Length: 460
Image (tube, rainbow, N blue to C red; front, side):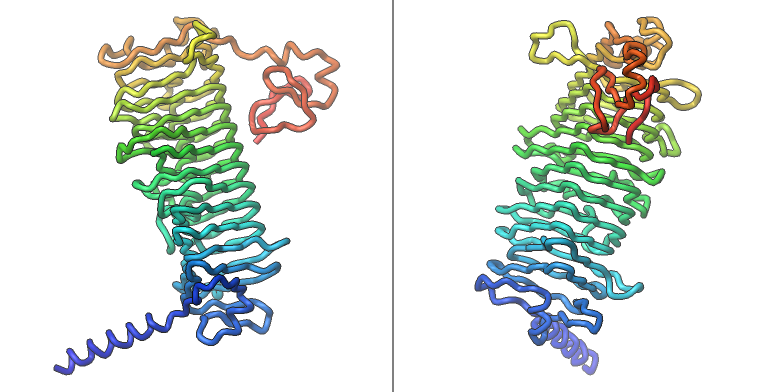
């Protein structure tokens, strides 16, 4: 009987503790951390050093705003979660810092799950905490923020994670550095529309989990843009570069654009899984080879599609130093790596993909088609001395090697660039950079291969 009474008492105490969690009144007020520190029981206190300690969970109700003031320093305690059902106005004029209160603390971070609550994050450094957004009728905009050392306690989907389907999200000009899990992600059943542009992702997934640094479910009518990012791995053996998927086979009309990214030193470069429409264009992929078993990965690009309904377009990519160039492990996706026969055709693609030193076990593998669909791959430069059918055949695995596999149509190929030779001596000495089309510029406008002083230069 005493045990029953003890249990009832503990339950009552727990219920009381939950009831004591501070929640704003939802009448349209704007709350700063300074204002909260003046409200008894809010869980926020002003410290002697001018920082604000958040020692207990609290909630900003729908209709209210939590505002981060300029130069605020917010220190969050162990297991603390701030729930924002209203708006998050985290856009100080210059800077603000959100971090943990002690070395042993594992704060969770910010649940921004209000259906109508927008999140504006700008000029903020987030340390050890995550952001989970789920505004069904709203959007998240992160600009010029740093997210580092996230501990993985708020959500397993990423440092910035999306908990519900929503559109109009933008993550730009941000840095994601050495986070325990991936930088950006969402769940398998809640696709989102998002622009991920001009960010640095460096050595994320330090826990070495089977996650790419960008890990997105893509379906519905949401378009996804992953453009102009540097995605640099820590040479971890399980974490990849960019992954987009539709593993639940959801209907989709949206398109995924993966363009102008520099992707290096990951387990793999880019992977697509399931039924997605994806444009992969003008990316530079270098040394995405840190898979310990070549049968399990290490591709510059891998296209998994057991549903045989994916549609993949690739143009102008540089793929170098992978265990494989492009792999198609299964299924019959529609893949267009180059189709040059009719420039007026709707599916015309000049190709312009370049393969350099991709292979394993002493064998070069530019394209490995283990699926059953025909792949168009004309207009590309293969890793052979001469772009002849006889030599290119040696770096492609397809129907010629196994009649049950799909055919790769790769002729005509494209000769290697002669831009170095075509730029005259005066141009080579002018100090300018030239792209492989011979266009001059003072500073490269994207990662890639450039020519300066008569030499090819890799710009990261």
